[in-house]
Length: 127
Image: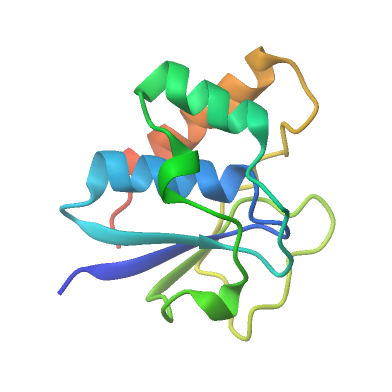
């Protein structure tokens, strides 16, 4: 049985959504991927959606939405994207913190750096 990996951010609108999409795209044979937050946003970050479509042909609007941690299956592995201040409490310890800064509102180059780091992290997951 595949392990369930959940990527957690506060708003579940950018980095965690990118990680879920890339996880499913790159490693769906190895793991089941989810993303969640402690709060939600009405829509996924528009720059993230645009760049994921341009870079990988993934349309996150078709398959993903912002959701809270209690709306995904209990994960075997919980990964924080990088909390900048304090990580949200999800009822358990995080297995890893990827320490990624939030690219929201920044130039495409910053977004792409974060996306490529998430891609590299997913490719090397060993849980």
